[in-house]
Image (cartoon, rainbow, N blue to C red; front, side, top):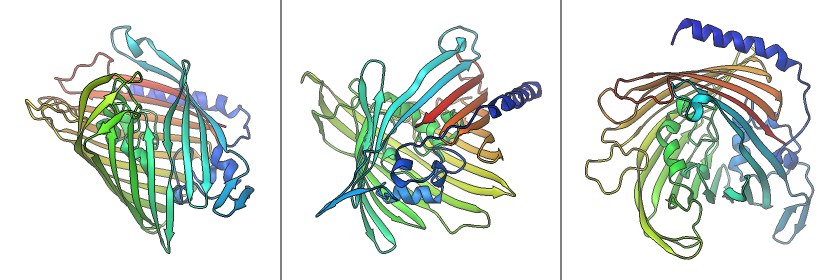
Length: 426
């Protein structure tokens, strides 16, 4: 990575920023803002989807807080008058610098990369829900659903959260940090380059289709512990659990500590553990049996974050380290997260500062990783990022990653990647 390339990238960001400042702000709110009557900034640190302390509390209480929203009340009934909805879109352009013109090397437009109808809120006094309906070009698909049952007990909250997701993995059930422990909650678009957890599990979650399970959570203001038994669907029929017979559940464990605020910063640290194996008999949508599929999970990660201010400038720092265990030679069931014969490892550290608070942020992330193939298998990366909040709920983000590969790593997509994303929720 040359100094000239870095300089050129930063100059381009600087040249682009004045143009963005001329864009008028819009006034729009997604589902939870409609429910609570509060701005998106009430729950989010710097920008959506990064959670602050209040956002973590709202999620821990199962999305049940209504604010000023009118409800229909009766015996064992507390239902909002309004069905809270939002449309979430992500438009993306990706360019890599490989020598061929295949795939993203020629530049790839994803219009949209994601488009969803997002329904969420309160079902009853202690029951909430979140439903993500994909607005694909071919057909609508329930991409994710969860229904938190929350039981407050003095200073504690006990929760049971049945869920399904088409690609987020078992962490989708319950996650409050912004380190990329679950793919959606991360500071930068280039996920695998800036989050150790996503480097380890992102491809596995996408390849192996849907995940369904129940997150069992013990939450306190100083942290939480969750245990999630789950199964992963057959990758050729993602999300179809209608005729699935699981023989065993895999396990996902998540623990987080959130101490008192230190100075101007809110701190958090945690661990993740994916473990176990599961075999399933599955029928396709026509009722025809497909071959029995077996999945195995064996990975762990530790992570931490600090969110606060340096002077008047908001700053978030996110760090993670993890390992996906190797698949033994001759094993009949490979590790979902690592089919190679050496351990797959990654360390990431990322910083994101609001240089114009609530408007313009600049970020930097560094990854040290080995892909598990052995030998010279390094996959290090440096990522530069710029984020501009056109409105509280409209975000423009630019990521540019430089890669440094080991001699044994094939690089058909070159050693640089640029992502330009326009995200909105309204």
